[in-house]
Image (tube, rainbow, N blue to C red):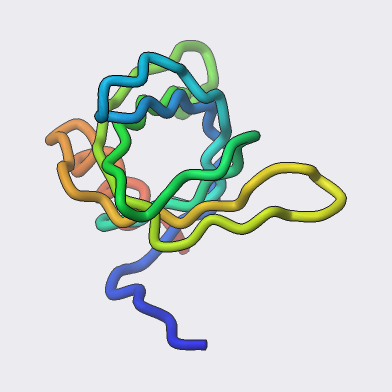
Length: 114
């Protein structure tokens, strides 16, 4: 299998809300497990389709886990696979619109990782 990653990644456990941009107002809760400058991996209860763009709202805890910040990005799935025992879909997202907040936080995390 070919790995398309072109930037470093970091393991996280962030809550997220996923919303399709095609007019469907359904909010799909999930959690992000990996982040990078250009993409992320997440788990959710619904399959996400590669021909759609999704709005992804990330709940990022501060370093001391006292408060949280909400950061919004947009992305398209590169894969979405059902994970048997979990009953959830693991989805890889390529980010199509990246906010400055996201860029700043990810850059800081990647610089500070050993």
